[in-house]
Picture 1 (spheres, one colour):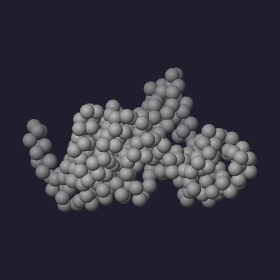
Picture 2: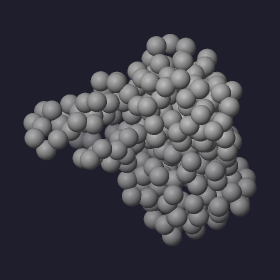
Picture 3: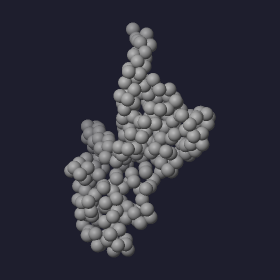
Picture 4: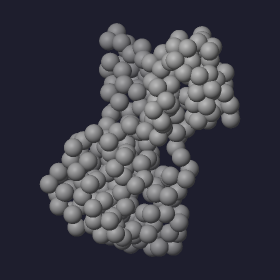
Length: 285
């Protein structure tokens, strides 16, 4: 495990939370809520506070990718004192325009780094393979996520694969009902709790279509309803909501899917791109 990777303990816990057992969630909650305390505690003290065996805590550390409690504690300590996080969290009303801009940019960098480190190779590969075989790809999102869905279609139309985006709740439900087993629905929701998105997910799965979600929280209802969940990680502060930073990670995940598909389709994608460039050229002076 590299030094960079050891600095991403909390994102790993958050992204894997829905897969934990009841005891694992007990340990996870304790770490998430008592990070500063844990870096000064022994495994015996943590186990005693939780009323569980030392082995339970040790197994949890292994579960999230560390060699043991000490390795997890070192990673957690590095993450807590990470200068990027500190800068991001100290945005104040008295900051200059340049200082705010710098902190926002650093926050975006942190979001991308955290998202990168919780990205699962097998999951992203599965999503790419499913999209390559799709007869039709439909992107769904509301509000800010609706803009991401539109951007996704704007990119994917270049691949030669049929794609559409919907941000209107009624059109989303109507279109989802017409999907087939060879289609793919990509649902984008930062919180994963949007009722319209959850409804679309149910309808899409009912048609037999494969469903992919791009969402921030591994514990969100949406991540449990889809076939392939892709996660982003972002944090909220007084002057910047999670949803703002998550857009950068959402766009980047869409880009990663798009570029993989362009590479896999090679000549077909290049032909589609050429036809599009010729058509667009007529719009220029």
